[in-house]
Length: 201
Image 1 (cartoon, rainbow, N blue to C red):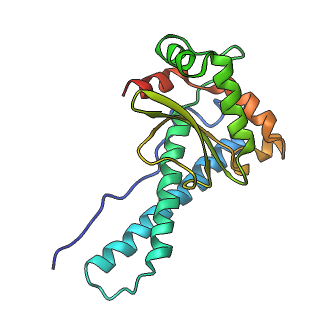
Image 2 (spheres, one colour; image 1 turned 60 degrees about the horizontal axis):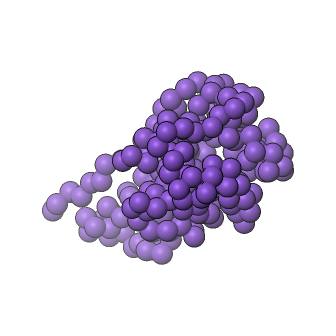
């Protein structure tokens, strides 16, 4: 019998200390967000892959495909988005604006950086329930999209280059229910170098 094995995913290290984004995002939130929430998506994705592999190896597992594939989609998407989110951020700067290729592309596609910023912020503030705002690259175009949860309303085949987590666990301890204040503060920690590198890939 053939052994079927997918590579298991692991929780990535943060590229900075847990307190690096203060005062925009507190050490407490970053610690909980990374070590509990992101870890739960890693664990959930691996558990779904375990079930699928046991079924494929003919080990007699009766699989609820709908539930298992939903779990894989949800948890794997959560892991992927968080992995981008961490690298999309850096130490805060009050006047943190992009330059070079990413600024030129934003001006080309949205008219100005300020117009892009307003559209992205509106998407982040209006996501229904929990989810994400993303700036995605689709061939030569850029699109602002909303994602509900981790895996609803997204567009297949696009590559996220800037993502903002607007699940309450990402901001509630610092901003309570004022999502708008959190979104407005986010611009101080955007790592435009990382966004530019993702644009070029």
